[in-house]
Image (tube, rainbow, N blue to C red; front, side, top):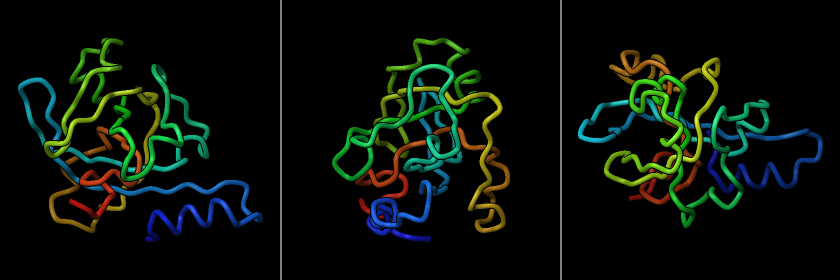
Length: 149
């Protein structure tokens, strides 16, 4: 695993690679409406662009949304959008809470999108969490992938 600053250096200075993406994986508490549940949260920088994945509604992360001072934004998995919002397109713009931090939903990933977990076999109990429910940009202060309070 590499730090976000090292990722940025690789992305900006390694000309032999066509593109570079970063990825992280954690379990967190997701609060939607009156309910809270433990879910898998993926963190990403340039991942969806590198893989050619386009949200079915809304948009993906912008460069200005990655890092400690950026607005907290999130992409929902298609399953989370269906289960928690009844496939309502008005979910885009709504706010969820991840471990008590607010995130504005900016898009929904395709139903077919799946990504392997770094947690598989790594932490006890994560196998019951299933696929990623939410994706957020890497590096938000106090958020997933930040390593900071």
